[in-house]
Image 1: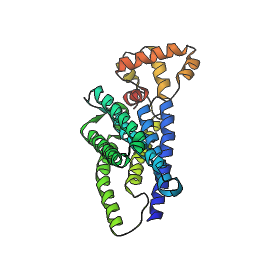
Image 2 (image 1 turned 45 degrees about the horizontal axis):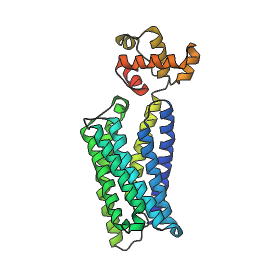
Image 3 (image 1 turned 180 degrees about the vertical axis):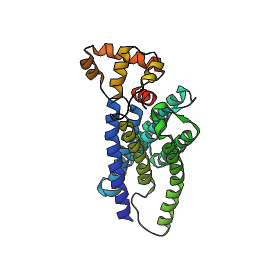
Image 4 (image 1 turned 90 degrees about the horizontal axis):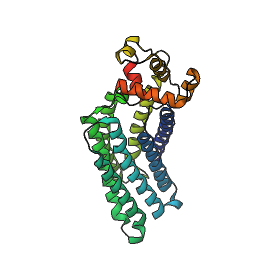
Length: 285
């Protein structure tokens, strides 16, 4: 069983690191959000904490247990935040503030839990918080529509949501059966499998996003006319779709970066969009 656990961990590490690398690239092209990057970093921190605790016994102490709980809180916070950022919903901003406030309060309790002897109790609270956060996020994916910038992976998102909702109880049952039969496991299968599913979905999504910048994608002239763009705005829209940065656009058109930003704002306003990936989805064939 230990060999299988190590294989799952290696696969999870690989997918998370590659996904994080692609997300940073996508963010530099204005086609990814910071919330998604924070979510992936939180997954990486959690799997690092679990690895240290379960595979390096000399480090197994209250401090590493606290590290795990803090990472779990971070995952529980960033999971719904990045889902909310990508979906069309009517949830009020106050929900985010409450979620952040609760996470902050729980973080303070965990840090001080060692001294006031409530760390064992807090483990159940944090686990429950993480479970509810993940399940509610997956349900949100099932009942809402995606924003334009992720509409290309709507089917995959829904399949992932179903997979996670099935995987959690199934993996917990597997761990229970393994323990019942006296088979020693250090980390179990639940979290590595969830990491693999989530990181794999993000990795595939960002590969698809980056593929939108391939030269084969062309913009229909009629699409530009439909939104009453000026000739300069059409030029900039074409350069944006090709993946050019504001600096490169300013150098090619011999205009200042603030002027480029002004034109981009006008393009987004006329097209009723918010970012580059939405522009690509709207205008590309």
